[in-house]
Length: 430
Image 1 (cartoon, rainbow, N blue to C red):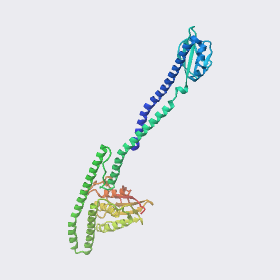
Image 2 (image 1 turned 120 degrees about the horizontal axis):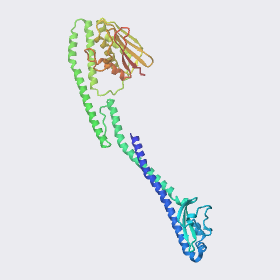
Image 3 (image 1 turned 60 degrees about the horizontal axis):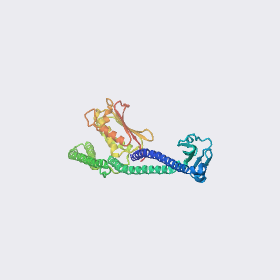
Image 4 (image 1 turned 30 degrees about the vertical axis):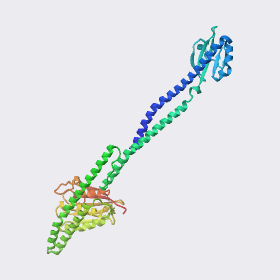
């Protein structure tokens, strides 16, 4: 933007300068030409008056001798006598003198410049011609210097205009750039970012409105987080009651498994409360080894699959599969995929979890089942569900995958014949 303003200003100023300088340069040349011609005309008239005064008494030859050859040469002048002889500067052979000899004063261009012809009539009717030449040097005297001055003045004007445009553009670009940088900080989660309103009144007003918008977003987000924390905290009461009831179960194995599940649920609630109270993640998460997380989550869901009589096949064909996904998010992603199978297929329907490396840069996480059909591609959008559910599960998977540069695909049915979800994640170097 700053460069564009400077270029536009330089272009417009240059055109204005050219529009004035070119006519001025032409005028300077014309004035120098007229000045030299006028001076030569005055000199010719002066010589002609002397000839008219001296010739009656001294004769035309005596008048020429009185004026002097040297003076005529100094004035670049000539006297052409009636007999054809020339005093002063030589007249080139072949130069047309017929008009002047006919008694008409005139001006004509010659090889050395501009010649002034002034006839002087004698008492006997003979014509003496006074010829004065304005040389090319005289006709252009001072023109080049004037043109250089005009060009320099034009360059100075363009330079001043560019400097003024640069100063003006800075007053616009600097606050706009600060707005952009602050917006980027807001995008990254720094909701304390604010701008100092500056620049022209319109941009200063935008800066003030931007600050108010940032404050409003911060307040709304904080209110949303507090609401999420409050709602999660309300789960503690039924959780405590459920744990007390679970501990009263006589079957030790069932009691231990139920208590373990409730402990996991309580840890999840605590995590939700902690995350909702944290304004922004400042630490850099190194990611996790997806093969380890897959093994842990498969072990967690295995008892439920046994209870429902499901065949749950887990295949981990990657000894190390480090991805740029936080361990908590990776676990939530796998849980969402598996929970989707448990929730939307009948008991005893087989399911499979497969992790494999495609090459040195990508890893594939596949979850499939032997249900009645494949999923609608629209269910990966937030809030979309083809059955009675929240519609958040696959959207959580999609957002987690895309946050690390990966993707989710509802692939063609595999060996089990039902729905098949494939998550593609890039391997990280950590």
